[in-house]
Length: 258
Image (cartoon, rainbow, N blue to C red):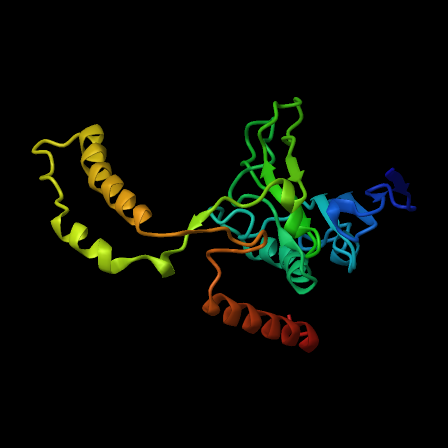
């Protein structure tokens, strides 16, 4: 049986909910915490009322952070043009998230606030983060619910045990049988393009040989089931860049140089 406890503080802009039970998410974890707060502008354009330390605490158990940060960062909205004040205001939060292993769950550039006055621009201010221990159970972040009439859209975050939602099998291209595939690739031909192409005829012309090529590869390539926490896009270069980023970030904070 699970126990749900509200953790009250003297602050009205911060609320925590803690769920306690044996073997949460099918693991040895016995508690799961949800941190929710609403942070507004402080004394300056770069300050917010809820500090990064409060919003993103250091934890050793599964923790989900869902906050109206009122900050703007390129990771959340890469298509937005950010000024220097927005970057200075958001950097401490994303820096702390990276340092303590929180993963940003939002889909980049998916707006979460639609101002009702019609003059302000759309924005991504409602941000979600998952701790390292919680990430293997993360399944989905979406804004697929109907509007409530409020200018902030409702957000769906789905968690599940890995065994309940295993990753889909993927092709293991490292083990492709190229020797048996090579003769078929040599005989494959691309039809001539349409003389007066429209969007429809061009897409059909492009998709036809591509579909044939993919089908040939799939017949000569075995399947593999990736790890639940595997990131197929990760590379050694990203690991090196991530390490360099954390080193530079720590040096910058230690120097106290604005």
